[in-house]
Each structure stands twice: as C-alpha cells, then as structure tokens.
Amino acid sequence: MLSTDGYKIRDQTKPHFLTLTIVNWIDIFTRQRYRDIIEDSLNFCIDKKGMVVFGYVIMSNHLHLIAQDSRGDLSALLRDFKKFTAKKIIESIRCEPESRREWVLDLLSKATQTHGRNKVYQFWKYGNHPEEIHSEKFMWRKLDYIHLNPVRAGLVVKASDYCYSSAGNYVNGDGNVKVSIIDNPVIDISKPDSLWKSIAW
Image (cartoon, rainbow, N blue to C red):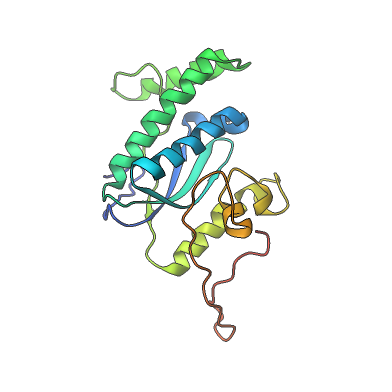
C-alpha cells in the first residue's frame, strides 16, 4: 500500500511505526471520550483482528502506533481501524454534548473537498507515514519517541504518568491497551550505541 506521503508498507507481516493524523490537525483528542474510542478500538483489533501493538500514544490531534498484523495484511487492518474509529467519533461529536460541534464538523466536511471521493466527512488524513521496524535498536528508538511525546508537550513529567500511552505498560506492567511488551535490551556499557530506556519513562 503506497501512502500519500510516499511511504509504503512493503512487508505486510512486519511491525511498523505509524502516525495517524486528524485532518487539519484538529485537537479532537482533548476530549476523553474520543481517546477512549481509540483505545477500545485498539483492544478490539487486538482481540478479534490479529493486531499486535508494541507501543502507542494518543496526542491531541494524532496517534503514534507501533503495530503488526499477525494475519499478514497490515494495510487492510489500518484501513478498517481508521474507518471504524472515524465513524464512531463523528457519531459521538454529532450526538453527544460537544461545544465545538459545528466548528469541528465544518472542518471535517471541508476536508472532503480536496479529493474526488464521495464523502460527507473526512476524519483521518490519508496515509499513515509507515516506517518498517527493521531492528531492535530502531524499535526502542521509536518506543522512546512515542513515550516521550507527552513529556515534550509538557503534559506530564514522567511518560508513565500519561495514561493514554503504553509507557505505563512498560514501567508499571499495566495500561488501558493490551500491549505486547518488548523485552528490555541487554545493556553493554562498553558500547557507546547501547540501548538505554529513557529515565523520563
């Protein structure tokens, strides 16, 4: 599957670092109920659709994810996930109390005008900026990047204090999503490029 940003999932069986972004960078996920929809959907995909999640974080307008499809079709799995979550969140915006309803729905509606697809609303931007996880070192680099997002944004001091990410799974052994934990790498202090988990976790 070729992404609109030029990145491509070449091996559908491999884990990938993915970024799912809301159109126009709308801060949808400042509301807890929309974050909950994402986490519930991740757990459903893990339980029923063969998704394996190694790490994730939900920020105000995007989702970072390290995921794999045990059934070997990551592109289709992501397509279904995005379609379902978009429908569910838009339904929640329309039917539940939302002070920004008109503004958000107007932006989601206008986003459909940039392409020829026949849609009322577009929630997610096209493409997922997929990067294949090709080594343990690259996996831990991406996990560190994901988990430190809320720290860099000034939301928490320690990554594990942010409950809408997998940092708590790695540090405390629990979290909202059923994450598959990667074993901590063996540290060899004689090697300058040895893998260290950030102290800010």
